[in-house]
Amino acid sequence: MSLLFPERSSVSTQQLNQWQQAALDWLMNFNSASTRKSYRNAVNSFFASCTKPPEQVAQGDVLRFRYEMEDAGYNQTTINQRLAGLSSFYLFAVGRGLRADNPCDGVKRKAVNPYGKATFLDGTSGQDLQLLRVINRKTDKGKRDYAILLTLLTTAVRVEAVANLRIRDLRGQGEMVFMQYTNKGGETVEKRLQPVVIRAMVDYLDTRRELTEDSPVFVMTPPGRRGTENLNTYTDNIVDTDKPLTSRTIQKLVKYYADKAFGPGHGITPHSLRHTAAMNAIQSGASVIEVSRLLRHKNLRVTTIYIQHVSDKADDSVSEKLGKRYE
Image (cartoon, rainbow, N blue to C red; front, side, top):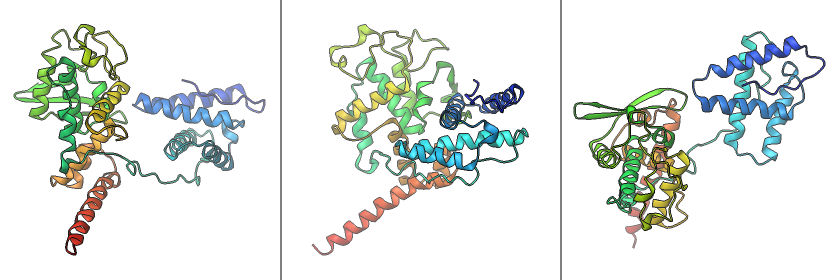
């Protein structure tokens, strides 16, 4: 868990230990293991480049780090994430009294539109329905995959939530069923599943009666149930029937069905289905606040990006009507 600070003769062992303890306490303040990992990597990558002890780092060193990442071809999201991690660490160090200032202050990060190039399925033309129709729901694997895609399209959760879902995370209350998952940042969230999803889940779980409360919901199908039509697919040749589908496998799963539905080059990913859910909600009349809650966004500005996509589509529709006037 310790960070890779450079050792210099000008830094005493006591000082180095204080910085290491601060780093440990800083990381453990984050609930999410992925956040701890990415922020730890951010600080380590900085000190792999900068040979100064942490208390001697200046703003120029941080700027140099940013330029080095840009020259190396890192995308802006990665650059911003590393700068954010480094800034967070130094802010914590200032609070500990290890130094008086944060050298990251004043180092600007370029704005990134996280959905500027995002793909989604056009609900108005039925592309989401077209994707679901290519699934062979007569097979055990097809029943499982149908339940996965429906969950993504109706709950707008991230792929990690589906990959990490356990049987115990499904809670029944009368005719209602709720799924509980850990959101980005470590927040525990519970979402109500729609009847169509519940039916798909029941249909799939009826084929996997051996699963226990601690089992993953979505697991690899037994080798004996993989028919010849399923051999050349997205699977990772995993035969453990209690092995959960990883996020990467679900990404391959989505690509496999999107290839069947639309051909290669579509760019559809599990995040596209999250984007699709938001787009369909907006087109159904949901407010930006309602969509923001669906997506569990902490900032409404991010949610408004979805609104912009709908506005652009509406503009195209209006222009089409105007053009037909003069045909």
